[in-house]
Image (cartoon, rainbow, N blue to C red; front, top):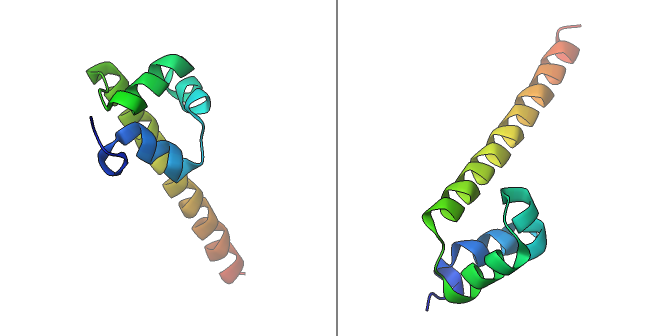
Length: 79
C-alpha cells in the first residue's frame, strides 16, 4: 500500500484543498473510484492521465493569469 507522501490522489487533494468527490468531478471519475485509488494507492493509467491533464491545465491557467496581470501592469506603467 502506498504512503500518503507518494499517493498522487491524496497529495493532490491535500495541495488543492479538495475532497475526493470534488477531485472526481474535476477529472471525470466518481467519488468511490477516487477514494479507492487514494486508499490503495493503485491509480489506473487512465485516472493518472486524467489527473495529470487536469493539473497541467490548472498550471497553465495560473500562468495565463500571471501573464494577464503582467500585461495590466505594463499598460499602467506605459501611461
